[in-house]
Image (tube, rainbow, N blue to C red; front, side, top):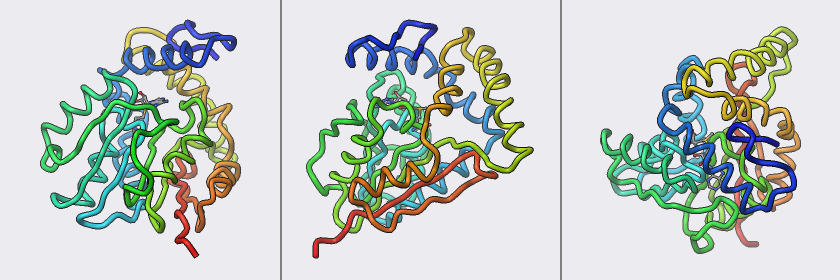
Length: 250
Ligand SMILES: C[S@@+](CC[C@H](N)C(=O)[O-])C[C@H]1O[C@@H](n2cnc3c(N)ncnc32)[C@H](O)[C@@H]1O
């Protein structure tokens, strides 16, 4: 796997891999929102709103956004829990968190969000302290998706939900081919136009190749002991929202 223009190799230590990944996200943070809107043809707000809705949080609730990036899913969660609620956005990239801070300062409810630096596979929160935990477009970039979902399940209370919003491969024949072409040709080109160099958007696009299909992601949720595990396909299946609930003690 190569990220950041080729600074990461398969034999690197986990720390070196994490550092290369962090550097890659730091290098695109200033253009991340613009490229998200362009590359998704402005569908991204709807995708994040759908993922936030799948969290099932109510006014006054508590939600965690893991790998929050520039804070756009975090804000959708803040809209649902309102002023009486609590939303925390966590990310390991300071440049992404700085963008999130700027974005949130500009909007109503933004000041209610708490942003923290942290690692998705080792969450620094006590068990059961959130009503829901979400992760948006990041399960395919964390070093261990299974452990990330396990951590999210740990910090959610019994009955609370764990949600992942992620890119997926559509199955309808024509859309499937068009999507594959889009990922291989258009995304790297637009990424290069946006950030001025190749690497990050080639990687983000190609990382979908190695990401497990929907049913395997569903199984991953089930293996962490989550129940009522379901997924919804959005925009012809190019994006999927998986969700599961932490069981109530019997
Ligand atoms: C593709 S962006 C997604 C950002 C945001 N969730 C969204 O909806 O746009 C992936 C984010 O995951 C963060 N990230 C990747 N690996 C991480 C890890 N191991 N721990 C914490 N954050 C991580 C990156 O810094 C980046 O902000």
